[in-house]
Length: 96
Image (cartoon, rainbow, N blue to C red):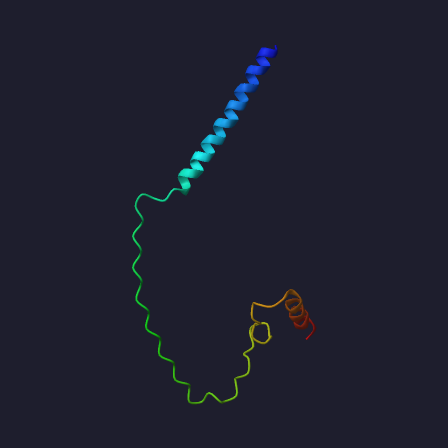
């Protein structure tokens, strides 16, 4: 019985050490530099800057009033914002 236990233990120890060797070898192989370096990609030419648009002639006029949608509310609010702000907007639509 002791002999069987000794054989099983030695087989287990051998398998653990062989796995460590395999892992160490794989790690060393992965860290080795490649045989041939990859060619460097060519740099793309810089894009030309877009021309600045000219300002509209009547830009200092007052903004138009918001259009009403089918529900009778002002134009829809932007999608961003915090949860309390969205909740408050929804509540104010119900109250008015």
